[in-house]
Image (spheres, rainbow, N blue to C red):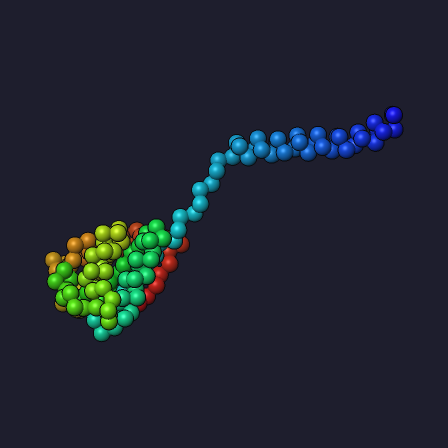
Length: 159
């Protein structure tokens, strides 16, 4: 009988140590603050194309829609040839094939929370004034208007 008891003792001791070890780990992990998941990268659409390449413009704006649907911060930077597309009086027939008009896409993105800014030098070259911009689109006056949205984990797509 003593032999059976001594043979069972190491197994019982190992089981007890395992239980106590798991309890200590559980208690220690309960003390640690839980980490939140990292924020999704900001999506920056660097829109350089203009009315001469509505395919690229539509793709960039469509990709921005996907970013908003994925609950990302979305920034659209109108520069090079695109500032004229940011005008509030942009014609409704400015569109790529059977896709929604550029004006409609921009309005929808603004309503969805996209931050939209225009390069002032590019706007000047294209003859666009700040007062001509569609609602929700800002002419950059201070670099913070765009740099405050560029983070270490920003992702930039150029169209």
